[in-house]
Length: 196
Image (tube, rainbow, N blue to C red; front, side, top):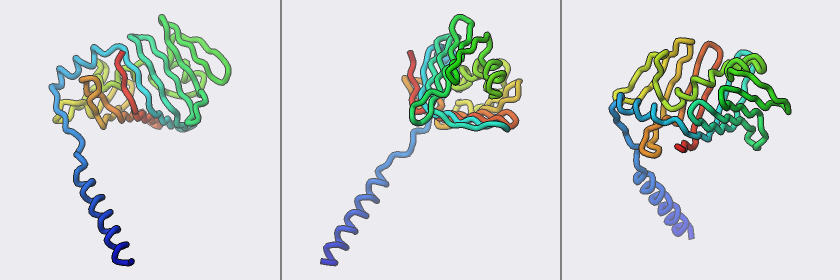
């Protein structure tokens, strides 16, 4: 009886070992940096789902993230892990609306509105470019040997770090993005990219 038990245990261990050996390493990508940046500039309509964590001197929170970008317009929804809305921030035709705490607020600048109302320093307009791994004129970009941006340092003090690039609809896009400016930290983990 004990021999049968040991035999089964050994068989399970061998199967687990073989399946671990069969796991493929993540693919290694290499791109022409200039061509890749051109590809990213052409992506003007996209959507991401994932998680966002924010930390400042006064506040910290984690939330589900759903962001839909259509040229300069966007729809940004943060919700709890149970699905309760934290806030809904929208920009349409140059006007910004924030639905927060059962109230509706209007502004022309999303970054200023979030700061004035909640004290959150989040450069919403710039993040819409940075989240794709796209360089901007006001930022110094560091590229890895594989041609992908590893870090951006912006004129307004943000350091943006990228990792976990994955091929999405024939474009390499980051799935882990960290933003840091002084005591303010934003971490975005993208679960899914969708191009419209």
